[in-house]
Image 1 (tube, rainbow, N blue to C red):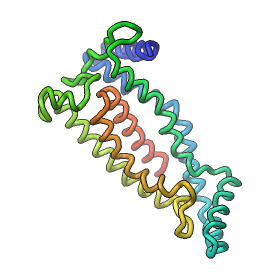
Image 2: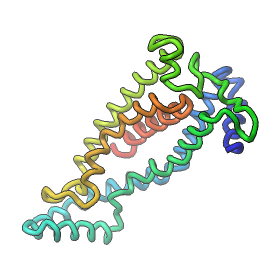
Image 3: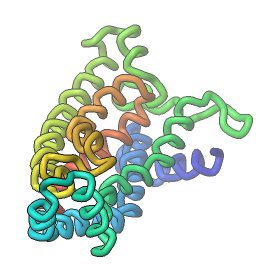
Image 4: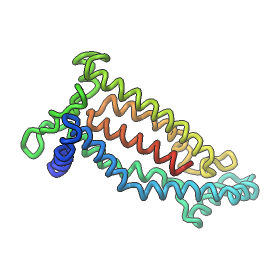
Amino acid sequence: MSVFASLVGHLADLLQPLFGTGAATAAIVLFTALVRLLVLPLSLAAARGQRARAALQPKITELRRRHAGNPERLQRAVLELHAEEKVSPLSGCLPSLCQAPAFFLLYHLFSSTTIGGRANELLAHELFAAPLGGRWADALAGGGVFGDAGLVYVALFAFVTVVAVFGYRHTRRTMAADPAVAVGGEQVPGLGAVHRVMPFLSFFTLISVAVVPLAAALYVVTSATWSAVERAVLHR
């Protein structure tokens, strides 16, 4: 943890001449961008997988016709087809899963009062009037919804809502075009619940911003924005 704290601290020091008191915030945004760049190959693979699944549509249509009276056999045939074509129905989940360790490191860093036996100096940094180690509940207790810190969260919530709506609409369109979502009225095993929930995951960012430390919320917001732009480019 002390190594990770040093990394964030050094990034903030490097950005200090450009961003002044907002250097720590800029460091978190930059750190998030670096993480997303590291998982970009997985995102590209997920986009290729989406296109590959769409290309299987004619074969899946033929399987529907052939096994119309046997849903279980149809499901097995579709899974076998994906295996033969080396197309994973769950490849789109990998980028999010690989980001989880970075998020939890940042969460723990800004939830700890001490790092390596010394006071956590990163907690002294703020985004405007909101401490990076604070939460929305702290902002409400300190000055209410429209207090100095509260307004920071109001702006974040407004921004995240716009991004979430975009993500929801784009994911719905993507899922509707994915032949792996449904086969002859029967869900491919394991995918039914995933595809029902996925469009709504965009709004989970709102919950995260409300309950995690502001630094971790910035990671979530930056990553969600990156994802929205990435989807628009890779899945257009």
